[in-house]
Image (cartoon, rainbow, N blue to C red):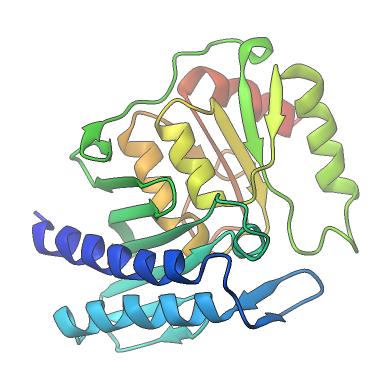
Amino acid sequence: MWEKESTVIRQAAYEAGEVLTGLFGNLKTIDKKGEIDLVTEADIRSEKAVLRVIRDNFPGDGLLTEESGEIENHSERLWLIDPLDGTTNYAHCFPFFAVSIALQVKGETVAGQVFNPILNERFEAVKGQGAFLNDRPIRVSKTAAMGDALLATGFPYTIHRDHKGVIDIFTRMISEAQGVRRPGAAAIDLCYVAAGKFDGFWEQGLNPWDTAAGSLIVKEAGGMVSDYSGGAYTPFKKTIVAANPEIYKEMSRILNPD
């Protein structure tokens, strides 16, 4: 099931990746959507490439994209698209960015892929069929103790105005984990949890297109995903924690101190 959709996602991600690699290091325009939230010509052209492929194959489906917003076709099928996750990295020529594409049907994410064209890493999953990196199965790590765990996080775009809660959690995590990294692309962070490169990830203030594909990939790799309070996760929630089952318990304890 979802074979055609997976093929279309792969094609769309590949064509967007071609755009991104072609413009990498050669940007002419960089604008701001917010105080520290960037948008570039690469975001726009990558999104156009993805939309063209999806519309050609599924013209009746709904679309939710970072740059265009929601394009509603009153369908039970909704594509969640981030044409360039990690725009700030991209603008600074830091090669940690990706195209993220997911499909929801009746509110459930059924297929998703995250593609970093510079590192040639393609993470993908279909509900109930496992998770893969470049067609090879992946699983979350078996790390069981926070003192042995490498975690990842990110900071919301509001960090300059309201940082106390974010820094409080960061302080608690870094005081117990072996290490914490802040690479700057949530979609890849989630996929690295799925592949066992990170043991866990948490962040707040994300958008649906940031996590829709990555959260499915973590689940299909044997990981756990929820909001900070432990509630069932959907990409429309504003907090996320993802990890292998043992580290998830420890991260939940730190996120929700007595």
